[in-house]
Length: 388
Image 1 (tube, rainbow, N blue to C red):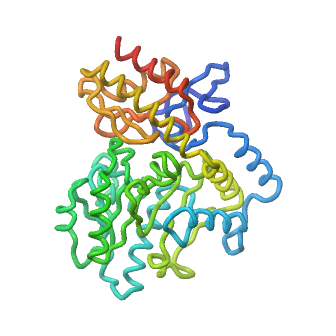
Image 2 (cartoon, one colour; image 1 turned 45 degrees about the horizontal axis):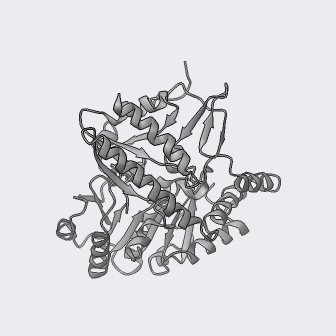
Image 3 (cartoon, rainbow, N blue to C red; image 1 turned 180 degrees about the horizontal axis):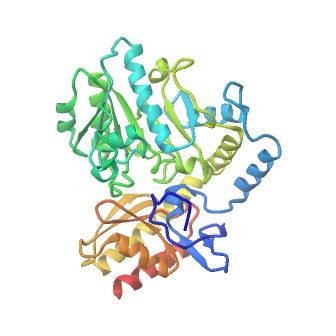
């Protein structure tokens, strides 16, 4: 009997090593990994630059307190701010911590600018922001909250995609709005660009902080470094994790100079966040993602995947209701009679790994480095199952 808490319905499947888009068991069986640790292994497994960087840093220094300057962290923060709207970065260990810090930053901004009564955050239906009590409360999923007592106060929820409902929910206590530009756990629904633009305009009108949760859809997965960049707008605060470390635990929340003005010494902290090992790997990930042509290649590969998935939908229109998402964060919404969870198990028998999402969706999350041949392998396996 395992000593681990039974909070996961774990498969007995265990992997010994990984290489590119494949994971291998101890007996050498190969599995195509189109789950990537739930959008974590953005550059696949065993990427040589990441491995070399981690080994080199491990020989030098693993951890020091954030009471001291960490040069690689300074460098990673500077590089990130040069690539987006932000001026300030705080490194975390996970996406939930990045969202917690984002909420605190929004509230602290309001307090620092003379509005301490503004502390509530508006989220949207279908969201998933993490497993801490505050992020669960922002998510507002009854299944995830069951047995943990009442929701943490301070979070209001409105229907996804409905700007009028959001405007109606704004009160004198509202501090900000949080949304995933592409929902992950909720079912791979991408926010319409006009909706995101309307959110930006509404936040400007009411003096609210706009928070984008790009934990799953960020770091190149949409075909741009950050998914909101397709809409041509900027948030005030952004949460990152998953792909930013390529498999090493790393997260961050980023903010504009204005939004971050309340985050003064002593207002926030992390023991491990941004330690030398983590930020060294983070810089290595960014090395690859900022290489000339990398994101263009992601967009090209995404077009191949989209074409293949649309062909599957046409071939199996009675089983596939919709293709969702964009770039290399995709979802197949199955007919209600075909549970996505069953498809995950069936694909596993075909030695293909995927992961389900809400609303009966199968997530398709290949490494950003996947090939057209690997897309063919994935689609062929799914085609065989749907045909059977």
